[in-house]
Image (tube, rainbow, N blue to C red; front, side):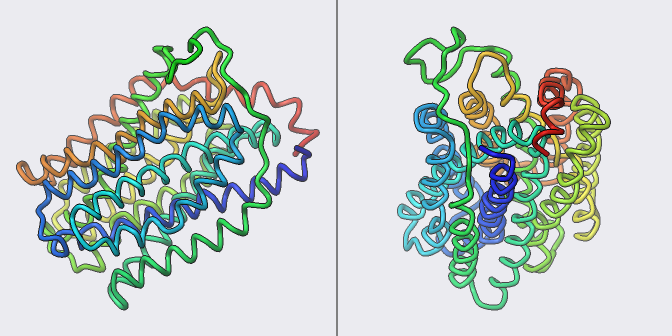
Length: 397
């Protein structure tokens, strides 16, 4: 990969992250519509979200091995193309059983694309000689903001089906434009004793603890993605449009902070950035939980987005530079555990919200971010890229 190819690959990666985020952002305002469409309550809706999460986690079990065998670029191309029709597939599903199957497919394809694009981002980081993970996730959040905002508008003006088709078309344009410019490293099969030959997942305790920290960061993100619209609409009596802005504003705040994240990490280091981020995110969730008005809750979600923004990218950079493991294998493990937070955990949040209410649920999630803050030192390897690649930066930048 030449320096010029690496720069083009960096732009292509931005398009991949943005298209994935746009689909997830457009999915958020679709969630409340499943209740009347299929005549279900929050608990059963949580079960459907669980199916989506199980599809993602199951696919992640194998994505790391696919990357090790074929490389990140072929795997990313395959799942990026496969993910384009998933949102219309869910929206057009005619029955509860078909929507459950569609959500499993949705989760599987989105989850595998997520692992592949994060692994590829680590490879591009190495070639550029500087961190790009936070800003890559910034493009995901920007896509989520556009998908959520435009998606809410399209649902209000033209209906759920039109929204799904328009967002899928926009994602297709971004993906097809970016595909020719993707670049990566050759396949890197696992050679470490930490993962015996034939083992599906590594057995390194430290790597799994990093995954649990990523999970604790992603649980609040999943709670906002899947339940903010219902919280704003049912408990704070927000209009459908305002309710749909919960995740959009959260993603917008994440996007702004993630574009600043690489600079913050270079200045303060990964550990200090993670500590400050955890405290800010926890404060935002508490404000959203105690909000007397929808706009106050939106402000809380903005603060939470600013705090959570750089926490997961730091975890992924730490995983991608974890010693003894190929980047694809390490990232697939951390992503799989972390995605349990954004995809599986919200299914239990639906049960808690239905029985305890949304306010205590969101307030309780702030505690998870405080746990990550207390264990921030485990993510120190996220800074090793800059230390190792520094001499190369002048040649490749």
